[in-house]
Length: 114
Length: 114
Image (cartoon, rainbow over all chains, first blue to last red; front, side, top):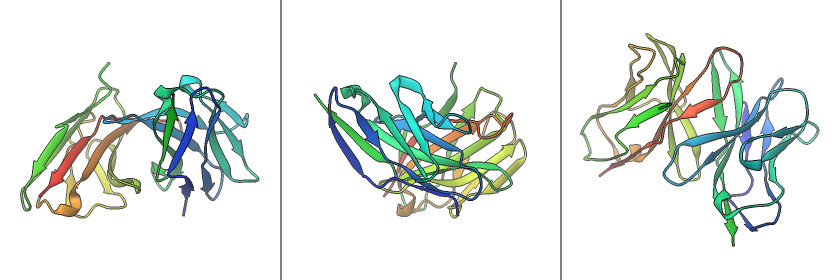
């Protein structure tokens, strides 16, 4: 079955420091990977996706993600964290089983301290 | 530019009551989805639709029903509410023109069954 795993329930980082939120995937065939962010009491917002091409994908709000095929990973990164980045982050894989659906990881809460 | 709109935002139901969660989108997307979000569990797919008049079950459909009479609307019906249906429900839509497009989410409906 196609799946993604987010091994950390929470990541803590100080403002100004780099941040990484981890995601690994298990898919048959080519992986189509997404990152979404959820702010409190809001729906999920799309950050970025990897379909093909360059392994470093740039997205919204200064986030980027590195696709690593040998490690089956798609980690989300930002060079300098902001307090306003504190939110719940979801990794997802797009699967095509007759229709396209997103399969989500369990989410990682990012807490950026001032 | 409304995107995906869900109503209500909050609701408390008694066991055995019924209700309909409304979802409408103004992006002319054919794909629409209902997810539920439980703490530590990520998002689970309840039902999906690939176009008006076409719906199918996702991973956790028991206790729910949907209809899709128009492209814009995709209501989710709970017939006999149970405490296990306490959750946050998200509606999403997606452009099916091109593969693996990103999904747009509503702000969610927080449902408590007591």
